[in-house]
Image 1 (spheres, one colour):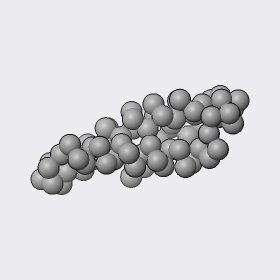
Image 2 (tube, helix red, strand yellow):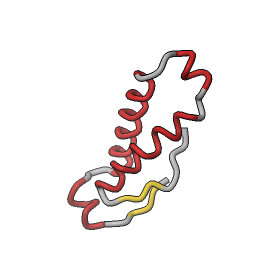
Image 3 (cartoon, helix red, strand yellow):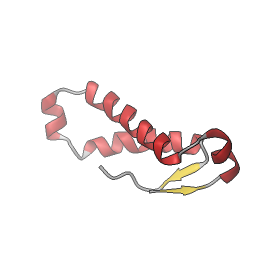
Length: 72
């Protein structure tokens, strides 16, 4: 879930906000998974949200959005 913070920036920087956020989440998830072993991932599945949220929120801010919630 997100909220538009800067509509002018959004329309000049991004064609599709959903697509940008989806890609940001995919990249953040791949980086988080690559940095952990399978045992670490299975033991701390909920911990991934804490890693993904800031990364996706940063990208959202860059295109004029505020990330409210990231569901996995």
